[in-house]
Image (cartoon, rainbow, N blue to C red; front, side, top):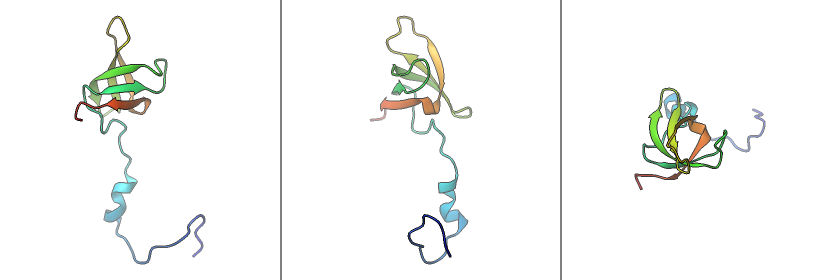
Amino acid sequence: EDIPHARNLVPGESSIAEVEHFLSPKPDVEGIAEGDIVELIAGPFKGEKAQVQRIDEGKDQVTVELYEATVPIPVTVRGDQIRVLDSEER
């Protein structure tokens, strides 16, 4: 068989159950906990640091509170728009 961009084939067969976890998408908010320190990497608050207040896994959204803001304003952003800097669990 000629498969483009494939260098080798692994001999044998694999069941769907063995590779199923590779095929399902991982939620963006996985690994984020309330109280974590995050940096916003997209949107109007790009580069700002914030603390996670609430996580909505169903909508894949996180509500954060900005650090440098004089008045604490909760901002809801998508899970792919933040990067964890410091975790409460560590």
